[in-house]
Image (cartoon, rainbow, N blue to C red; front, side):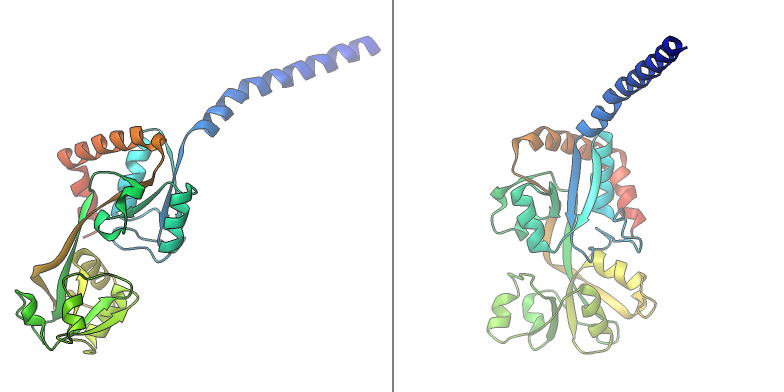
Amino acid sequence: MGKLYNIILLSIILLLAAIGLTSLPKQARAEDRATITLSSPPTGWPPFIIRTEQNLGNDGILVEVLRDISQALGHEFRQKFYPEKRGYMLLREGLVDVIPKAKEWVADPTEYLWTDPVIDSTDVLVFRQTNPIAFSSLEDLAGLNVGLILGFIYPKLDPLIHKGIITAHRAKHAENLLRMLNHGHIDCAVVNSQVARWIISNQSDLSLDDFSFSKTTLGNAPCRFAFTKDDKWRPFIRQFNNHLAQMKKDGRLAAIIAHYQ
C-alpha cells in the first residue's frame, strides 16, 4: 500500500511540474513584451488627451494614435499622469518612455528622440460674437485685454506685453480663459483652435454660437512624441513613422481626428 501511495504521489508531482514547465514560456513571453509608458498631464489636454472619469486615460487623438500603433507593433501600452516638469524629469531618467509635445515648445529638443508629426497645434484668437475683433495683424490687438495660458510662451505677443501695448490676463487652463471671455472679463483669448472648440462643445454653459475664431493664426506647432534618448527606441520610432504615414494615407488618422470634432 505504501509503495502504491508513493507511486501516486510521484505521478502527481511530475504532472504538476510538467504543467508548470509548460506555462513558463507563455509567462516569460508576456513579461518580455516591451511596455510603452506615456506620461500625460493630470488634467489631460482635450481633445488630444482626455482623462476619463474612470481615470483610464484611454481617450484623445494623440493617445489613440500611440496606443494603436504600439499595439500593432506588439507592444503593451499604458498611460500615467504626471505634472509636466515631473514628466520631463522621469523621461530623462528613463522612468517613463514618451511624452506628447512639439519640438518648438522644448528648450533643448536634442535631449529626446522624436517621431514624425501627428497633428498640428494651431493657436487662434477667440472673441465674443457680440464684441468682434478684426484681427489680421498684431497691431489690431493694441489696447486689448488678452487671455493667455499661464506658463506658456508667446513669442509674437511677449514684445507687445512688455511694451504695454496689450494687457495679458493669464489662467491655468483654456477652459478658464473661455469662461473669462464669456463673462466679458477679457476682450479675447489665444487658445488652440481644436481645444477651444472641444471645450465649448462639451460645456453646457458655453455655446459655439457665442464665439468667433480668427482666420489669422498666432502660432502653429506640429505635435509629435518625444521618447527618452535611448537607442532601443530608434527602431520603434522608425516603425512608428511608417505606420503613421500609412494611417495618414488610408484615412485612419483623419477618422480619429474627426471623432473628436
